[in-house]
Image (cartoon, rainbow, N blue to C red; front, side):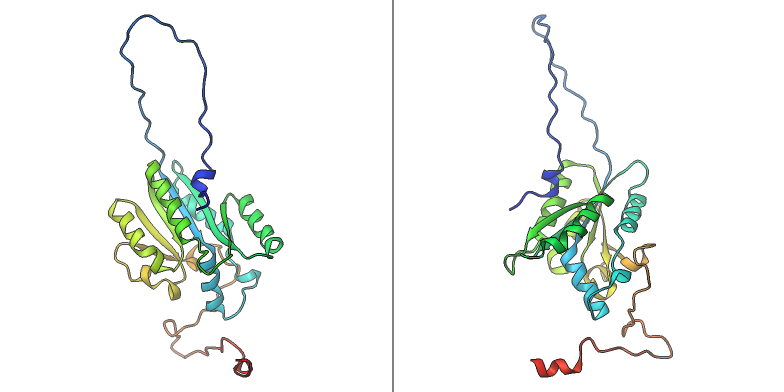
Length: 233
């Protein structure tokens, strides 16, 4: 498995030199371990969020309907508080041949302050779910992990691990779209926040009329594909 951002972001241990004064046997003093800072960790499942957003819109999203990661970052900082440590990570697949298309997006994320874990999409099972879970576990083992935010609607991959984190005393929030994150919306122990409820994440309101949000006067639900596509099957 490729190293997680937890491995890549860990600085090398600093070694300091100095003379040791030999004054005979002495009781070694145990160093006082400082408690690690309170960490709020965001892991963003880019393939899942992109798929959910495309399904919600019924088409490939334009720039007006793409999430603004600077707004997500500001929200995460507010969750961590002035004395907490906020870490934002995006996990994504890169389809062979799409490097030049993906590169500007990856660089933009890094410039905002997000770490990016990119994995080649060379097979159907080249998902990043296990890499996300491995990174969460690495941060948990380090200590100080108090809040995990997962941007994904994939209950099959994340429900049980996130419930285990809650049982261990870690606050867990799932952010995504209520239409595609049923496991979190219905959960009694995992918090859910719709992405559109985070201030400034979308430049324009999402056109998300659904059977669950019908106005009293009714609403049209447009087709998700052209009728002519029936002839192409």
